Length: 402
Image 1 (cartoon, rainbow, N blue to C red):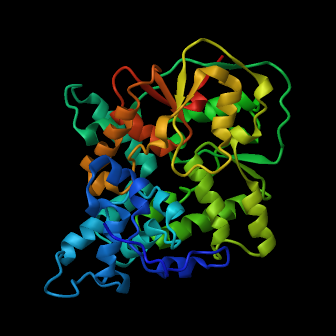
Image 2: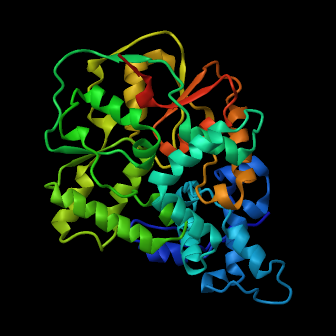
């Protein structure tokens, strides 16, 4: 076991992001207790510490060549290994050096793009055409074809899987008039009923929330794939749309979209002034944070497990809303296990992604619920593709009944 360097400097509130990124790994191993990929596989080379050792062999200098003939990893193997990251960011939260390994890996992918980056770019930019089409094609295949990628595509055309767990009470709902919906790619292209239910919950059907503006992807997943230029283009476009609409409140349905949109404020390119940057960050609001729990009534008796996504912020407004409405029938997910979505890992190592998902479901065996609800689009698609037949996976918006 490696020992931590007691003289290593711990990060402080005054550290800059660049300093934290370049600070060396001290091989303390704290990341091993939090990395879902290592926990599910028990393979050290897949852990953040293992990847840091690879980067120590020369990748931090943007070189994919081994530093010596004694190196155990050639360039191809190193590139593949560094692409095996779920991007959950849990290691960054516990690192005493303040290192953000997922961010480092994104920079490596940006400097050394491969076919996976090109394919992921196409997958996201052509989502409107590709997702519904491929989902329908996969749905036509025989059910006994249970290959992981086929099952993942089937989820793109899957209709709602759950019955309502709460009902909106017919009463006046006060909601800001200067608001528009940022539904995210999944809701726009393969889950339009999320948008319909959001409108019903707010009692605003026919208002400006009924419009889907010409948003681009939030950019989170393309940044993970090492496509910074495309991510910047998406940021600039979305900020321009928001500006044209009079800088309204942006109501989000996906926690990953929420995190990505708020993260725009850390970039310098999309904004015309510091005041606009601050206004943007305040404008991004998850739907659940704007809802009054007293306007909803719990129905039925079935318990529901809540899956807390990796990229959700604290406080978790989705969990708070469901807990207040569903009361004792909401069961918190045990151990905050990762679903294994991992974005680019769906291309580079789908079997590892499913291994993490299998570990997730094994931890759920003691739960007596047939419904897992969450607020992350990626988590929903991943969990729906890997769930036992007796379990339905849904966005919490789908729990609404008329």
